Amino acid sequence: MEIERKFLVRGNDFKSRAHKSYRIKQGYISSGNGRTVRVRIRDNQGFLTIKGPSLDGGLSRYEFEKEIALEEAEQLFLICEPGVIDKTRYLVASGKHTFEVDEFYGDNDGLVIAEVELSSPDEPYEKPDFIGEEVTGDKRYYNSHLRKNPYKMWKNEA
Image 1 (cartoon, rainbow, N blue to C red):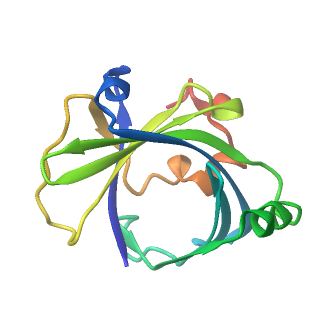
Image 2: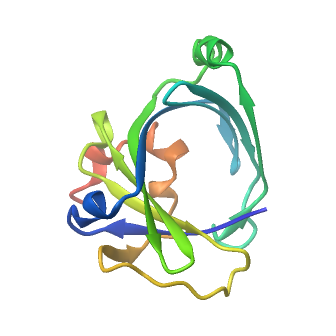
């Protein structure tokens, strides 16, 4: 079970505070009704991820992830739905947690989102100063939605 909170990010301070970063390309084999089957290439590693629907407003959902060969991931991209997510993920420590900050490119250029994974919905955590508005549960910010309705199409409405 994945429990996470999602936030918009202010400024670029997170980059200098990151202890690690890597490039991610991801596509969706299937997405709908809150369920997704995703293929991801992170640097030179492939992953297949299945996520179930959220029953609590986007705070938690079932997640299964398995590492697969890079060549298998590249082949799975051939059967993905249209639209690919391209981003750099920065890992930023804050207290006992790590915030994953995603800087998007392409049609989602200009969007920067941070997520923190928790062990329970009410677990306390320290927010770094670059954390802005909480967008947990706002489907516009789900990667599966961003590939169909990219940020460039609605950023002036946000």
